[in-house]
Length: 157
Image (cartoon, rainbow, N blue to C red; front, top):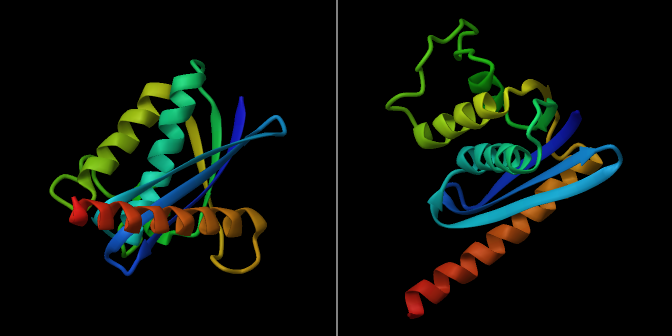
C-alpha cells in the first residue's frame, strides 16, 4: 500500500507550547492526525512528533508493510532520519542516544521497524504555497492554541 504523508509542527515561541499535524493520503482517502503538547517544546520536536504519530496510526490500522512518502519542510528531520550529519557524512547506528529528542527518534525507529515500512522523504519548501504543507501548518498552529488553553487551565487548577 502506498501512503503519502504531509507533516508539520509548530510552536508558540520556539521553544514554547506546540502542535503537530499529519495528513495521510491513501487511495484518494485522507486521514488527519493531530495533537498538541502543553509543555515547553521546540519546532523540531513537533515536526518529529507529527511523523511518529502518523507512523503510529498507520501501524494500528495497517498490518502489512507500506511504501510511505513523507513530505516535510524540516531539513532537521530529513537529515536525521536519513542518517546524515551536518557535514553530509553518514551517522553511526545509535547516533541519537543522549541527543535532543532521543525519545521520539527511538519511537520513530520502533514504529518504522514495527511496520517494516519503506520510507522516502520529500523536502518541501515551507510557506511557499504548497497546499498540503499549508494545511498542515494551519492545523499545527490550531493545535498550538489548544496547547495554550491547556496550559492556562493547568495554571488555574
